[in-house]
Image (tube, rainbow, N blue to C red; front, side):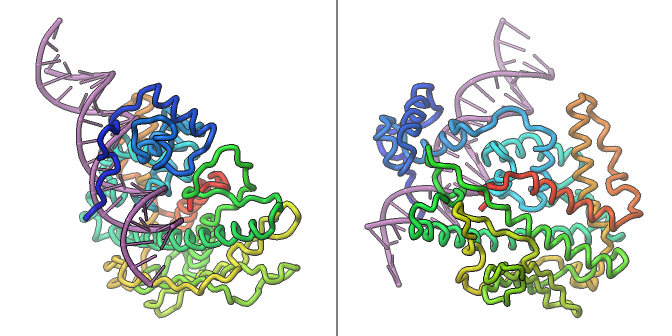
Amino acid sequence: MGRSPCCDKVGLKKGPWTPEEDQKLLAYIEEHGHGSWRALPSKAGLQRCGKSCRLRWTNYLRPDIKRGKFSLQEEQTIIQLHALLGNRWSAIATHLPKRTDNEIKNYWNTHLKKRLAKMGIDPVTHKPKNDALLSSDGQSKSAANLSHMAQWESARLEAEARLVRESKLRSHSLQHQLGNSGFASSSSASSPPVLNKPEAPPLPSRSLDVLKALNVGWLRSNEGNGGIVTDLESPTSTLTFSENAPPLLTGGLGENTMPMIEFVGTSGSSERVVKEEGEQEYLPEYKDGTENSLSFTSSLHDMTISMEGTWTSESLRTSGAHVPVGDVIAEEGFTNLLLNANSDDRSLSEGGGESNNGEASGNGSDFYEDNKNYWNSILNLVNSSPSDSPIF
DNA sequence: AATATGTTCAACCGCATTTCA
DNA sequence: CTGAAATGCGGTTGAACATAT
């Protein structure tokens, strides 16, 4: 079934790299870049497979790698993004400059996961392990609610990734047409980091826009319900990107309309729609002054992503999906609890964390504020990411 | 000092996805 | 359009090192 390992070829070395091998690889890539990993080893005089070379380069030799201890900020980012994205290490890594997905994965498995478990939190779901005991007061519903939101967000991120990829492709092809316009599209994670290539102007993070849209929608929903979130559950949710959306933007933007993103929960009696309609100017310009009108506006196919069947918040479905926001915030509380415990770890004052469980969600008196803070914290960390982060 | 046990992390493996001829 | 090759990604392994007994 599966492909045979590329290193099966006789004579190819495996295992730890020697300084000499590192030097060879570095020297070769510095001079030639890496066009084809498969062809690289022989050209560089290495008895390794291309895959091994690529791994060594991306995880260790790349000059833009930061090594050493993770900062508190980085830990917080990992925990929050893991709660949102799960084990999607590469996606998480895009928000942690100079850290590799492998490093983040290792750090999670050896440090953060254990810390969570120690705090009584399931590191997979980010829910308290005694969730069942809390079900009577709505904790499990809220946890499912946040999980549901994470799935939602995750699906959206993936959809955006496709948009961005397509956009970049088109942008790239336009470059060829424009010839020496002096503008190079930003590199992505999938594009090889060819050396000596002029740095491209950073593109704003689109994922941030989505989070903002979600945040706005969420908060507006709260406003209309006195701090109660309604109808978050969407057993059949659709995500629609429409290139044919009417040009809602004025002020000379002309056809540079933003994609209209709709999140429609079809199960609820009150349709919940979050739209992002040119909320922000996201029109990177070429150096010659022409706007990059290709981004998100060109002939993208109307795309409807049905996520039917992916929502598992059965409890919400049966409960009418009216969930106190404060319960959701318990998640943030646990994350903060963990981080506090982490601080304890760092200050060598072990053992004080467990007793704080009861305070995880604070007094729960201001659900609205807590919820806002949760999303703000995620937005902040996304905001703080480099704008040219090759997340997609 | 010797041995057992635990921890860390670079590297490997294999599947999934994307690219290309 | 199709299939093979290339690449990306996440899970897992195992050697090296640290700590406990």
